[in-house]
Image 1 (cartoon, rainbow, N blue to C red):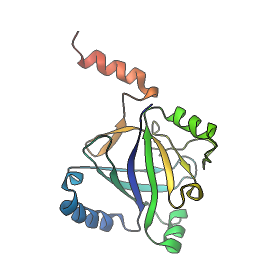
Image 2 (cartoon, rainbow, N blue to C red):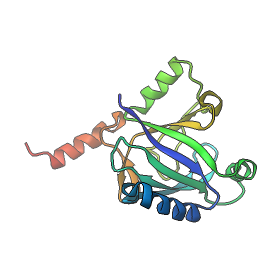
Image 3 (tube, rainbow, N blue to C red):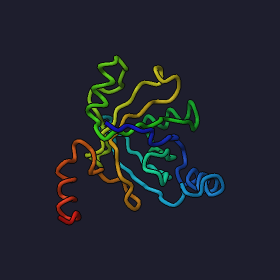
Image 4 (spheres, rainbow, N blue to C red):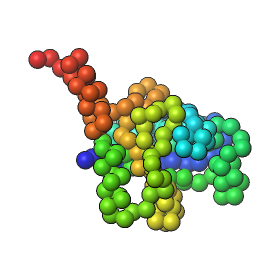
Length: 178
């Protein structure tokens, strides 16, 4: 099973302003992060929170990316957190090519998970996530998520993930010469 630290995510109040500021910072400090920028939006399947995000993708598939996210409309829990804490590092994400095994391993090791069942954005049902509590992590949430591919401005299912064996077979049939 392959697991890597995928991204650090900041909860921000103004996604457009945060994007401009981080693009400026990264253009000086890590220009390769500005080459591929993915964007997404959706409602959390568990609590219905509408969210939108931008991720400055690291060009190394196992490198660390920078993600910014904000509530997509007012009136949800992120607004309360932003009012109380301000903008902050919300989570550090670990992605796995076998999400279910990663979750089982955490449970077997008595690492407390926030959700009984994984959640996902309603716009990407293949993407699963759960979290290790901020108390256990001494600060931010630790997101446990399905590994993905950056394709244009989108995240796509990774064909090498355990749950995508049919997709991998389809790609091999289509693109691998015999």
